[in-house]
Image 1 (cartoon, helix red, strand yellow):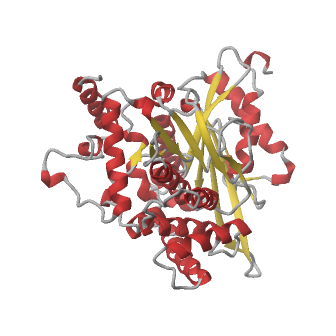
Image 2 (image 1 turned 120 degrees about the vertical axis):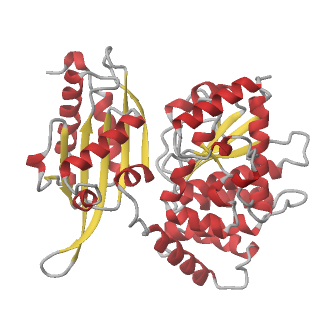
Image 3 (image 1 turned 90 degrees about the vertical axis):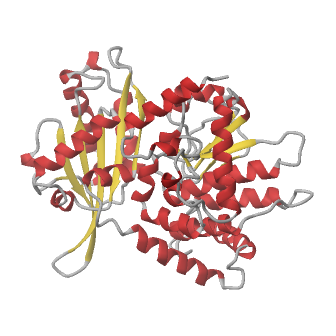
Length: 454
């Protein structure tokens, strides 16, 4: 059994790493002083989530990690990823609770607690689902009492939702199931269920599987309306109120609607209203500074290279819905150097070697027609795993890989001549976002060998 000293050390370390987060968030949701407590959420869904988090942390302290399944989405932490994880964790526990082999499952949101509200649509959806203020009934990455590298092999397993392969730090965990609406990378071929399907929302796939299994049970478990409604919200915002939905999205939404508190309304009206509400919230980023914009939708991982001196390189990718010029105006000095200073502080904190910021915004041409513009900001650091010579070489390799991709139509940013060493900014009008750019960068790094570099 783990000692209280170990737990205290973990909590103190967490407090040191996250000075802005209330310390009570890491102590089983049971703060020592009543003044620090927030009113718990209302309803079965919030109660279940809070109680599950408490049981997980208690079992961790008792060295019972092997009894638990962690359901995790991607580290971007959008509404779809969060909803998919919560839905499947709830289903795993409740569908097996009256069997000889009940499962313990918890949703792990692979972002920090203080980053959840950087996506205002998440905050609105959770408020609508009557979850606890401050998200204290959710388990986030900064609340894990043990590093994923050491925790992962101790678990019963993990389930990936809205995520095709685990991050390197979870590579030692057994993958039990995968649900994703992107490209199948061939990971965990024996996982079950293992569903890859092109849908607007991964929540559609997860909810469909949940309903299929629920309806086959001898007796259905209680399905809280708050969970049903957050599922509808995730499908609505990902499908544009069903305007961009697949047949699977629509059919799942219909089934969920019939069980929800919206059951007396037309599906199209409900989904349009949810999309309007959540999409409006999603745009409410006016108060976010550059650092928060960088981390609100950031994904990263380690990538292997053939270079003996540098076998792994850390990559990070941020998606930001503003031009670099507008972001610069949000810095204290309103100048280019300050944006890169803030960016450098953020990338230093995350420990990345290569960081790519993918900006997108809309403008109008001389005829008044809307144009969608994207930007790629590439930077390479030399103070984490790699020295200056390696950083120069890596920058050149990734720079050339992006330049060679003619389908992107990259053009140097209008202030590219003001950039420092190992900094580059391009603009383009292709539809290529992170799903296109990330593989180009990763492939370039995987083929990079410093020993063979010119």
